[in-house]
Image 1 (cartoon, rainbow, N blue to C red):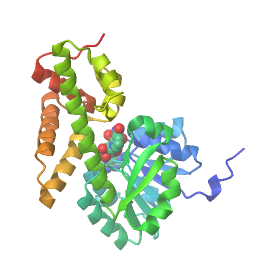
Image 2 (cartoon, helix red, strand yellow):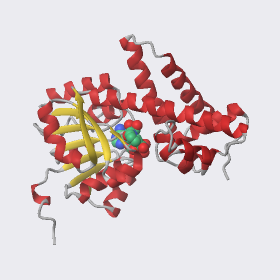
Image 3 (tube, helix red, strand yellow):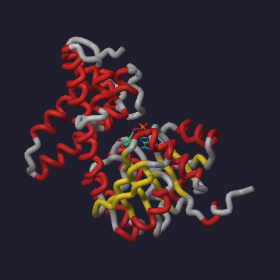
Image 4 (cartoon, protein in one colour):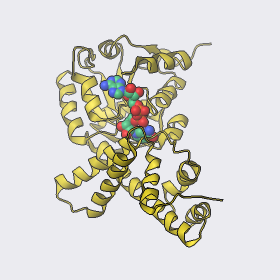
Length: 307
Ligand code: NAD
């Protein structure tokens, strides 16, 4: 039997079938949304169609022309700008008047505000809706989604966002969701590093880092990294959370640039950015963000080990 709700649901064009885009698009399929898919690595879209469903669009222009809602889930705002407006094949060339563009990338607020103007000139509306929760919550459809944009457009987006997230928070005008997301990741990145340094100090003293993680998790030192990353990805030596080191450095850079531009002194944040950027330079490309612990280990001269 076909899903009766499918006919009435808007078609969604999903651009960026990566670590996050894949499970998010899969949630939309589960909720009965017809999907058009595109990725710079075409094989990603083709694999998704084979394994999950939907149609692989012939081009970005064709994807936009076939969609009521276009979602971008790309690494950076530069990628979003390229997909929207660069070259001969782009989304703007195909956007239906009155369609809705939802940029779910953790992007740069100022760049998104500029792109939103261009989308408005083309007769459509763009909001930003970056996410938090990582690959596990993208799979379960329980992301936290931070939204910036015109409230009417955000209300139009709500049913679509509800298919991917369990918490939808309106943060302000377009760009505000991405500003919030960058600041969230600054806090998350700081919590990760300070926790790893504590584990290293503790191990040198004679404490077991696994036990320390358990103690932190029932104490006031608990944070998202102690709960969801230290045992799972660092002490296991898996370093495979599905969120790259380069993307985390990008997010911290957005947050510290916001601080600089607004004249707010943030020396602790600047040191945090320096540490993460140094780790990325020292460890090289293709690293998971949890591998930043290896940089702290390099500085300490020994590795974390647990019983
Ligand atoms: P990813 O690198 O796994 O996937 C990005 C996809 O976009 C790739 O498949 C790539 O081929 C495609 N792409 C790049 N440029 C393109 C273009 N111009 N046109 C079409 N496709 C293009 O990245 P990800 O981990 O899925 O992250 C996506 C965004 O979500 C980033 O902004 C990231 O910071 C954010 N984010 C990631 C996580 C996570 O846990 N991975 C969590 C929250 C937010």
